[in-house]
Image (cartoon, rainbow, N blue to C red):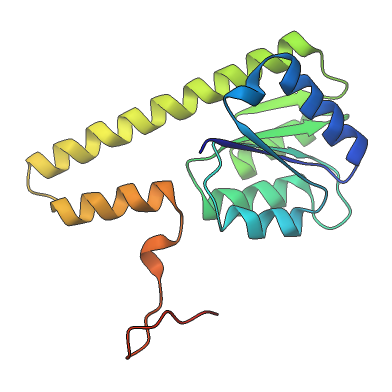
Length: 176
């Protein structure tokens, strides 16, 4: 399942973004998840793979840059986008440098630019995945990784955390 996450403390902004994604036809390709809290969004990031995360810059619980840095740490392959009403150069530069944001979306956005940004992000994700698969195939051919290691990487990409299960001595799964 392909997912996109939208994070903003203002519910009306999330709803407007979701409507925009519907208008450009992305709702058929992606499952859209909305979060008003970056803290609950981080928990969700640890549970499921997201192709794209769009986060507001200014939020009360945590800045968008700090949130996207955590997203990067948990899911480094997720394409990160920043949303803000501020066009201040330091804000944009900080987001790009600290959280490696792919693109910056200015509020209020216009629909054609939003569509182009999302489509570029999806294309970037696909390119990155293809490059990783090719590199893994080359490592397998050169006996640098085993078929089991390759399969574990594939499973981890599809379901983050699945290969890091804690097992009890009786074979049960230990929950934190």
